[in-house]
Amino acid sequence: MNTARQSAARLIDESLGFLFPAALRAAAAVRVADHMTDDDESVERLAEATGTDARNLGRVLRLLATRGVVEETTPGRFRLTTTGQALRSDAPHSARAAVLMLTDATMWRPAGEMHRCLTDGGSAFTDIFGTTFFDYFARDAETAAVFHDGMAAMSDHENEPIAEAYDFPSTGTVVDVGGGHGGLLLEVLRRQPGLHGILHDQTHVLAEHRLGDHDDITGRWSTADGDFFSAVPPGDIYLIKRILHDWNDEQSATILRNCRQAMAPGGRILVIDAVVPPGNQPHQSKTLDLMMMSSLVGRERTEEDFVQLLKEAGLHLRRIVPTSTVLSVVEAVSTD
Image (cartoon, rainbow, N blue to C red; front, side, top):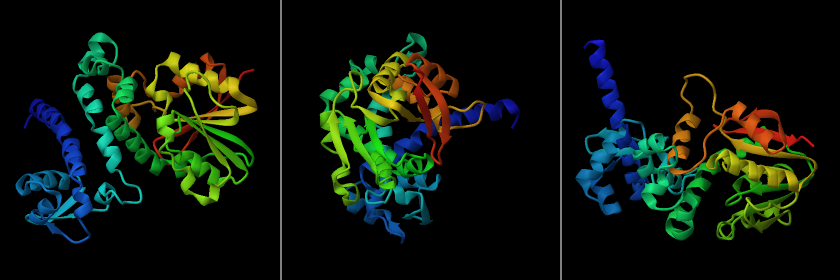
C-alpha cells in the first residue's frame, strides 16, 4: 500500500474511533460488568441477567475486547480484565459513573457539532440545547445527577494522590470551592488532623456530600452553600479543583478574586487543573480541552495561561506541583 493509501486508511480508522466510547457507554448503561466475575461467562447468561439481546450484547463485548476491557476466552464467552473491573458499580474506584457522564448527550452531541465552535467562535451547546451548560443542569435534575456522580467518580481516584503531592500546613482552614461531594477535602483533612475544612457549593450539591460518613474527621468540617461568582467563605487555603477549566478567563478571574478577597493574610490558592504541556505528545488535557470548547465556555490552560489569569486576579503563580494524576497543583499567592 502506498503512502497516500496508508494515510487515508489511517484517517478512516480514526474516524471510526467514536464507536468505542459508544460501546463502553452501552456496557455501562446495562451494567453488564456487574454480572461478570473472574471466570468467563456466556453471552446468553449475561444477556439474561441484563435483559438485553444476546447477539447484540456479544457484538458490543467483542469490540470492548479489542481494547482490553473484556477478554473473549472462547467464542461467545467473556470475562472482565483488570481494566474492565473498573466498570463494575462496586469497584473500589469505579469508572462507571464517569463513563456515563463523559458520554452523556450533553457532551456527545456538542462534540459531534464541534464545527460550530470554529465557525461561530463559541460553544456548540447553546445552539443544540437552547441554554447554557449549567443552566440546563439547573432545570434537569436527572442530567445534573449524572454530571455530579460522574465528577465524583473522576475525582475519587485523583483525590488521594493530590492530597499526598502537596505539603499542606498542620493548622488553618481549608475552603474547597465548588467542592462537590467533598472527596478532596476529606483526603486533605485526613492527612492533617489540625486542619478545619469548609465545603462550599450550591445547596443541591451539598445535599449529597459524603463528609459525614467518616468518623476520623468528625467535628473538623462544615458546609457553606453559595455561588462562587458572588463570594466564598473566609479561609487560609482555597482548593479550586476542576472548576476554572469550565469557565472563560473573565469568569475564572472573578472566582479567583473572590478567593483572594476572602483569604487570610499569607493564605494560598490552589488551582487544581491539568496544565497543558508544550509539544506534540498526547496528553489528556489536549483532549478534554475540546470538550470544554464544545460543551462549556472554558478551556484547559498552559502554564503561561495560568500566569496571565492569576495576574488579572491580583495573584502570583508561586509554583506548579505535579501529581501522579493528569492534574497539577497551581499554587498562587496574593500580590498585595
